[in-house]
Image 1 (cartoon, rainbow, N blue to C red):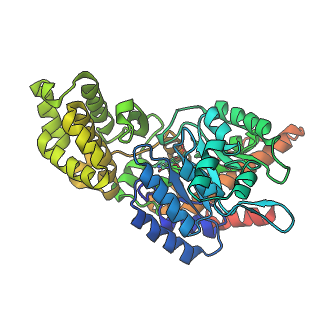
Image 2: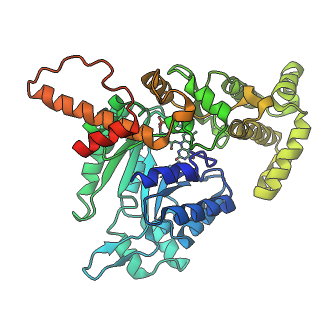
Image 3: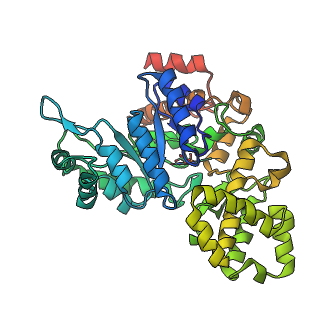
Length: 448
Ligand SMILES: Cc1cc2nc3c(=O)[nH]c(=O)nc-3n(C[C@H](O)[C@H](O)[C@H](O)COP(=O)(O)O)c2cc1C
């Protein structure tokens, strides 16, 4: 979860329990990511952990710098997300250090778990890197010809998380439709590689209860990944108010709203609707952006609404802040905006949308109505499941406790299904899947 919401504390807790957490590197500076790497490497040693590598179509330099950092710091596992196509930095990460071992096997020290919701993108990840990337990396002196030859025999990612309807950026695809397609693709693509390079598919999106976890495993998921429910956990680096709002969410309390990063393209993200007006305000801004070429063309009543209620300053004052931000980050945008009023309007509106996430994360009291909280229907399903249990209050929501409960409940369901399929009558057992305390779970797994 971006902006470090999946914090070092959350990744560390997961790693100590033998699970993998991916630090939320998206939206952070290189220095902040570096600090997180140092912390996790010092605290976790050889235990599992990973980092998010998020595609930045508007800032390829940032993507390259992130890859340079991961390579320099020997971060061996990334969750690659938001890719619509592969990029040279992504392929560079995968191929860095590729070699044959003494037995002739191809060794890739860096592993990618691709997070994907589209088959055509999954196909690229499950294929060897295209010739153009290899050529470019050879030219840049980042790999040699022998390494390029080895690269032609391996997939860019051996592991892929199929991401169904989720919090944040999502195609809203139902898991029940998406997973079988991705699994079939895996079977098709696996045939081109040696048996010692198996391809695997996990599932994310909507997983929040023992039943949904069991369904994922029943379909053949090699692992499950959760996001929304973890945002309400004690280890999540977000405000207490956001966690409280999340614990009150029901399944219908979510909606789609314009995305700050791909605003002009009309891309949307799934957010919490209850308790915040962000989705409505975001939609209003997108509507104005679509209709008018210049902020000055917008009727006065609408302009006043945006300035007084959304920006809480004049458009020109907000532009001064936005301009200063882009002068540091990407001055080309300023040059363009000063010639093109529609682009200027987009940058100012995007600035509001982007800051709405930070207001939520920091718990800015005077901005609660503007909070942008990425969240999927999983949150409501989770809240219904844990109602009345020790996991209901946010202060008890420990990441590992929740993950173990999902696995424990899924294991129970699968066992009961096996028995039922063998003709054993299974009586109704109300409360069987209620969240268990840590010791009960430990006992169950030891017995198994
Ligand atoms: C608050 C929040 C922030 C997220 N940020 C990112 C991100 O930066 N990169 C990413 O790959 N996925 C991000 N996701 C998606 C999650 O990693 C995960 O794939 C998704 O939440 C799983 O679906 P679920 O929300 O139904 O559990 C985010 C999700 C949430 C709820």
